[in-house]
Structures are given as C-alpha cells and as structure tokens.
Amino acid sequence: MFSTKICCIGAGYVGGPTMAMIAKKCPNVRVEVVDINADRIAAWNSDQLPVYEPGLDEIVSEARGTNLFFTTGVEAAIKHADIIFVSVNTPTKTYGLGANRAADLRFVESVARVIAENADESKIIVEKSTIPVRTAEAIRSILETSGSGHAHQVLSNPEFLAEGTAVSDLENPDRILIGGETTPEGQVAIERLAGVYGAWVPQERIIRTNLWSSELAKLVANAFLAQRISSINSISALCEATEADVDEVANAIGTDSRIGPKFLKASVGFGGSCFQKDVLNLVYLCGHFGLPEVAEYWESVITMNQWQKKRFADSVVQAFFNTVSNKRLAVLGFAFKKDTNDTRETPAIDVCKQLFEEQASLAIYDPKVETDKIYRDLAVSEDEPRLEVCDSAADAVNGANAILIITEWDEFKALDFEALYDSMVKPAWIFDGRNLLDHAKLRMIGFKVRSIGKPLK
Ligand code: UDX
Ligand code: UDX
Image (cartoon, rainbow, N blue to C red; front, side, top):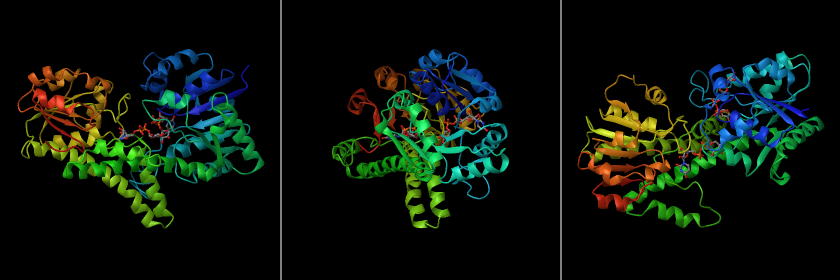
C-alpha cells in the first residue's frame, strides 16, 4: 500500500515537525518517527505534543495513525525502512579534544552503529542533523566496518526551518538541499529523496550538490544569519552612543536590495540551539584545517553576542546606580524567540544569571515555557526565595522596580501598561530587549525606558 517507508531517528524539534509534514504531503509514504526517549514518544502520541509550533497539532492529529507513527522501536523501524533520517541532537562537545567548539557526534555515531546492525538490505541514510563537514564519511565507515556488507547510500539533507515558523517553513521552503555521492548510485539516491519532497516542493527549488557542499552550506547559512544579528547588534551600541536609532538605520540599509531587510532586528542577543553551536563548529573546523584567521573572524560573531547580552544586563544594573540588590525585576519572556517553548541558549539565561548574581529578585513570566525548565536552566532550586515563576505578566510586574522584555511575544504588546505602571515601585523602568513596545507612549505613562540601539532619553 505504501510506495516508500521512511524512518526518522530523533523525535525532536526538527525530526517531529519535518516528518509530520512529509506524512501530510505524501499519503503514499509511511513515516515512523522513533526516539530512545519514551516520554517524548508518549507526548507525540498525546494531545500535548512535546514541541510547541503554531499549526503543528492539526497536521499531527490528521496523519497520526494513518501514515505517521511515533514509537520507541528503533530496530524494527530501521529494518522496515527504505529511507532512514538521522535527526538526533549534535550538541557542542563539553569534554576532551575540541571541547566547547566541536560538535559532539556520539549520538550520530551510535545511531550509525544501530543502523549497521539492523539494516538487512541497502538503505538510504539521510543526515538531517546539522553536523561538521565530512561526517558522512564517518557514518559510511561505521556502516562499512560494522555492517553486514550491504551498500548503503549516505545523503546530506540539512533542515533550514526556524522554530516558531516550522510549519510554514516546511510547507513552503526557500529550498531543499540534498547532497550525495557523485557516483551513479549516489545520484539515484538523491533522486529518490528529491521525489519525496517533489510531492509539494517545485523541482527548481531542490538543490542537488555533492555531500561536502551540502554539509558545509548548512553551517555557513547559520553562520551568515548569526553574523547579521551580531553586525546589527554591534551597531546598536554605536547608535546609543551617537543618538542614531538602530531601527531607522536597519530600515535605511535594508532597503538596499543587495542587503535586504530580513534579520536586521537588533536584540538582547541571539539564542536557539543552532546559531552558537554551528558557528563554534565552523570555528573548530577552520582551526582543524589550519585556518586560524578564518576561525578568528567567525569567532567574533559569538564574542559580540556574549557582549550584547552582558551589555543589556549591565544597563539594568547601571540604571539602579549599580545595585539591583533586593530590587524586584519582572522578566517577560524566557524562550529564545516568540512562538516556541524552546529555551536552548536563550539570552534570558545569561541575563537572568547575571542579575541573580547581582542579588536581584527575579519574577519571570513566559506564556509557553514550563516552570521547571526555567529553574533548571538557571540552576536554581524551586525553594529559592529570589526566583519566582509567575502565571501572568501582571503577577510578575506587581511590586516590581523594572520590566525586562526578553522575548518578543505578541501578547506583551497588548498589555495594559497603565495598570502595570500603577502596580510598580517608582521610578518604574522598562528595559526593552526587543524594541517591541511603543516607547513614546510608555514615557507618557511615566515609565523610564531603555531599549536597544535607541537614543537615551
Ligand atoms: C537536533 C540538532 O540539535 C540539530 O543540530 C539538528 O539539525 C537536528 O537535530 P532538535 O530536533 O532540535 O535538533 O534536537 P532535540 O529536540 O534534542 O531532538 C533530538 C532527539 O533525538 C531527542 O528526542 C533524543 O532523545 C533523540 N535521540 C538522541 C535518539 O533517539 N537517539 C539517540 O541516540 C540520541
Ligand atoms: C535558525 C535558522 O534561522 C534556521 O534556518 C536553522 O534551521 C536553525 O537555526 P532558529 O534558531 O529556530 O532558526 O530561529 P531564528 O529565527 O533564526 O532566530 C534565532 C535567534 O536570533 C533568536 O534568538 C532570535 O530572536 C534572534 N534574532 C533573529 C534576532 O535577534 N534578530 C533578528 O533579526 C532575527
């Protein structure tokens, strides 16, 4: 009944939504998503999906049980599949050679071994996880040495979706990138995978490359995006010093079609599981291949981001004459961007930790992030009196000296700031880390306002 059987190892932010979209668009393809984490699989099979993405619930509930399945049966799924996606996490290595820079490939490696042991015929193995260049070679050598002699094809098919917009990014991608071997067998494998995406993506948007270009292009795409944010954030500091307005500067340069308007929003700093990890990975690769100047160039993207987060927290402390000890600071937003419950590398962590060390009391509210995740991320115990996680923005702000906007959630724009102002200790401050709010209006109410890259008033 099914023309192709797909298995995806890793039911995370990437694997889950991507497979749900393939299942939706390809009714003749059977998709099984497997994960070693049984709780995560149980959540994918429930009404409370483990990943919050607008529009995802509908897609999953439509396809689940028909041609989309979530299980923990890794071995069986490998045996049945024609195409195996590897979408496990590849965090930055925290130990040994390449610590704090190189990607930790132990999950990818162990998955390659499980595939080798369980694949009883030739398979197409697709790297979905972002990985260092030439990882396909490592996977291939594991398959060849520990397998039963079947000739598998390894493809690179990086994912470019952004969290919060995953469903529309998957439905209407700028491009699909597929890298494979230049041999006839490699080309056949590329076309087989291109055929799956061809069900909804126009052929001219499916880019075919060699394996190494595809692997590298993913790292470079994220590095360029991160670099744009660090560039505009560096200019935000200069704007504050010169009374230029960073949003006006961004708009003025963004209308140049060679520069373009996207990814020029100055902020408290970029977060997310990918940007820092992938830039560090690129830095490591450059060092490994004897290119220290190139490594240093890209490393500065991270340095600027760290400085921007610190600069924001410093500005809060400075506004209170260098001490926030026992001040109540309402932190609005903890996710690394709006429309996600993901907190990986969120600037909220660095900002909150710094202010917590300065002895501030923090009252945090985020519409989607789970309370226990916030305590875990900040490494603070739940009975710590200086940290409170609140159920609403109004609760967090009540009795506070300042509001800090860390995530650009739409609901923060619609808050009743007059009522919030009345409930605060005066002078009442707002530090807008996303330039989200109407600052002139806030000043009319009586707030003292600081934002990113705007003249200090
Ligand atoms: C991850 C990587 O971070 C990213 O670089 C890559 O592009 C795609 O995969 P994400 O989906 O956000 O992104 O990761 P995560 O949400 O951590 O999901 C990975 C899943 O793999 C986890 O649920 C984990 O339990 C699972 N896993 C990990 C396995 O099933 N088997 C393993 O051996 C290791
Ligand atoms: C990113 C890439 O966009 C995506 O293609 C890749 O597959 C994974 O990494 P993601 O991390 O989900 O996606 O979100 P993204 O929208 O890129 O935002 C990353 C961070 O940059 C967020 O913290 C966001 O708030 C910040 N950002 C983004 C800015 O500060 N300013 C901007 O102009 C854009």
